[in-house]
Length: 213
Image 1 (cartoon, rainbow, N blue to C red):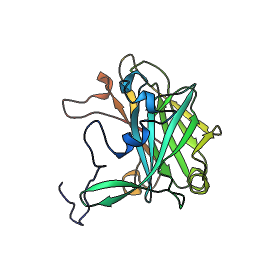
Image 2: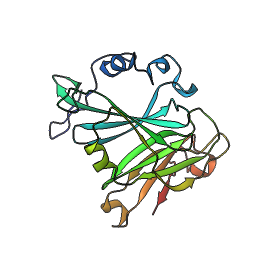
Image 3: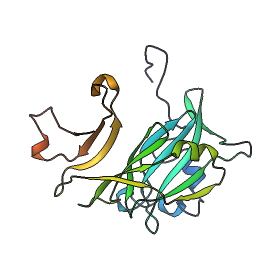
């Protein structure tokens, strides 16, 4: 893998397109094990979005949504030779924690830390024309750092706003916090869309997103 000028490289868990250390950990999981064999866009196991806090990673699950609850997987990783490997989250050797969020039946499309809060872009698990919303989990960073439970439920989330979507087009898929140099010092979020409609296209090489302030 190519390295950046400062020596950093992109790494992944050792494995192939179907199996790695994480899928092995989930094979017998009571919540997600049965969904590993179901196609992701049919409410099967489908990771979309990742938030990083030191060694801790939060993996957002577009699916499955279980009785209305969306899932986040919390893991920790470290570089080991030319791959990543899972490492314990605590002194007890916990390799995985599961967080279930009440997103009104929607799955996670993307997630991003901003200060102490976690912002989540949520939409339908399957390829449907349905509501897409932005949620905020206040104080998420501290809550995650203090948690020692292997499974927890988070009901208290703030619905920030609904995002536009079209008929078979304009489905919000990605969210990022713009750096001050690009936002003019005004807190701003960039939302990008899958299957952009004609109104979001400007020639063959330009696609417009939305800027939220």
